Figure (cartoon, rainbow, N blue to C red):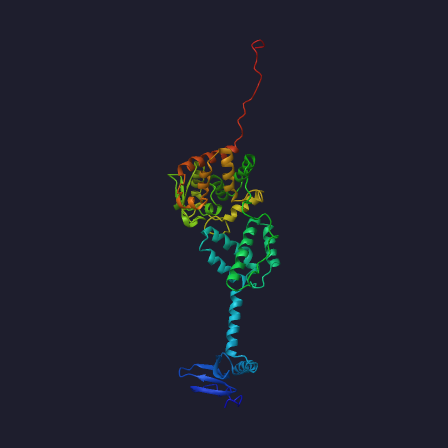
Length: 409
């Protein structure tokens, strides 16, 4: 029966009875009592009888079933088990689907989200969605090369150099994730060193000289978008991370105590942080009530922004518009306090570090030092805010004239 071919016809398949209906060369249609109709191929490989599913009738026609049978028999002639080859092909398809930049990007984000602060995750997702995924999403990670990634980074660097540096960091992480997942050969990293300049820790642009700080604050105070202006001044007055400032919530504030209580989930070190608010910062917050109308966040989003609060990137964009690209970044307000606060106001280094919520240095300090310097910080930050405001006030000049002598009276 198996040697006869093309026994089945369209008429015989119109209403077949339950059982096996042989076509030839091992192909048959199996009809169940419940009416299911399945194409099967009976064959032998390595001395064992096997079955191979070829599809469901009528989705797979008789002609197509015969083509699949012939393809399977061609593999058998070459000593290949068609069932095993199907597994290999399916694995290759799954690997191709898992091995795109977009798929590995998602794995990378999910893995890093376990240790990232929410703002770090938000920033990475923004960079991916806006800049990296549109050109790279469907590229196979196994063959992704440095030149094509470098072209994406250079295009970013022309407009958003800070984000381009972060994007380079993310891409490197994605490639390492692919290597760990077996989707890219071991050691096959990307060479991206020459594509975005000015990277590295300690190289965040920050204005620290009094006359430069005065010019920066003058430009900010003249910026036309009031919400963005207030958020930038809040960064200056408190030296908190810009993403945390942009996502400030009303329920985090104790304005009667002049305190901002940031939950640990929003902090880089995952530790809750109390920020004393100088009177200038409190006034900024109170001014935002007219813009929030009962909303959850103090700084509402600008037009066309999809975030529920002001985008951190709106702050970076504003500084670029004001002409401070490469001179002062949104993160630079922290360096500004750490440097000018110490050099100009003599604020104790430990107090400054506590205000910045930096991790304690050394295992012993991490284990036993619980000091927060809350009251010291309260006094220091009011001095800092007053000093910042004083930079933009014209100096008081007393006219000097000649005293009239009694003789010439």
